[in-house]
Image 1 (cartoon, helix red, strand yellow):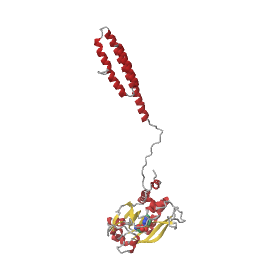
Image 2: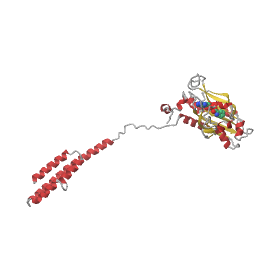
Image 3: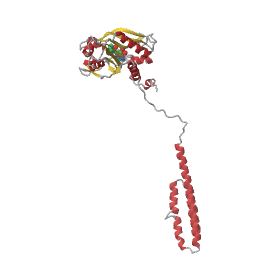
Image 4: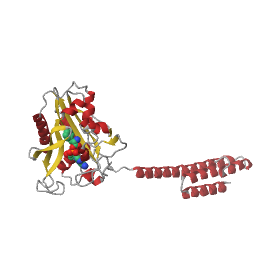
Length: 344
Ligand code: FA5
């Protein structure tokens, strides 16, 4: 029996040594030391031994159990340590690695420009208003002194939805809407930025969808010199005192007198290029003194009230300020172009 036990010990320990994972160790534990295991089986036969032999064999059996248990525990500890080391190695963090950049969006250049213009005019006491992009013929034209058969309607090639509804061709309808809301007896000082639409052929400076920013100041004793001063302040703040500005007489049915304002082209420095159509100047806004008919249609008495209005093109302003050569770059969403204007 002694030999049987020693052989069993040798066999079990060899198996433990050859084991490759904890599952195998558990199987060996059950096979040798479990209730139905080999060692237990041998011990069961002890009853057949002589009385004197029993304690000696019993002691050997205990030693064998202890040795097998120690071998199993020792190997288990090795496996556990290996597993831990593997886990630590896998989870190791190299704090010297550079972080992964998160790509964040930013405002579109036109949004930035519009906010900049808004800030400027808010600083001069103007409120910011909004109006609908799908507009009625009445507000887009008639309330601005452009009756249905007026030839000046040809200046705006329009996208009509029905006979009476169209995509607004300018932000000027918001003038009429705001004046009407003010009931004809309060001063109005507002700007309105927004998208406008025209059936213009797209080229370097024209887009069929572009942005405008309207301005309107109605009060008692508002004069042409107020308009000039306001536009001059705007242009100097926006482009710097060194850029040249010129006002040209012009015509709009809703203003009298009317002017257009040009800024010297930044792209060519005034020498003439494709952006300024070889003239050295780019037109950025139309303006004038609000026509008495427009005032009275909106409920203001032109004998008491006067006002000025302007409508500028933020697309052209952004082109002039940042030297952008083609207006279509604002609408074709090439990320390489857009990214240049994110100032985080
Ligand atoms: C108007 O739209 C008038 N409503 C402006 C106005 C308002 C005059 C109040 C008087 C009083 P005009 O069509 O010129 O005017 O357009 C104004 C500005 O919008 C232009 O100076 C130009 O900067 C810009 N603009 C006009 N058409 C386009 C276009 N197709 N693409 C980009 N910008 C344009």
